[in-house]
Length: 117
Image: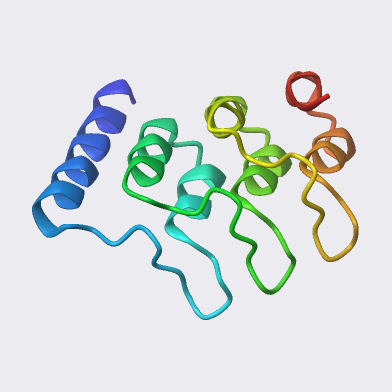
């Protein structure tokens, strides 16, 4: 698993450097590359995307979720920690009025609740 993660990170790093990757890419609903990295717990990729200009607080258009909300609602401690370092806005609410903290509480991710309080 560690080797696989390293190889994926190396490949993405190489692609970003070689092809001048545009970090602000998103699909038609506003789901961004940073949200994808956060929702799948890839802190090294989060670092790379933010360093090349990804919008840390971008909100997708279907639920109003940010990268931080995605990471918190899925219980990804490493991604939450990384996003908070930059710092991601922990007070952004989704279209139902929930913050990342509310999602972490709902899903009983106690470590993440502690990070977000």
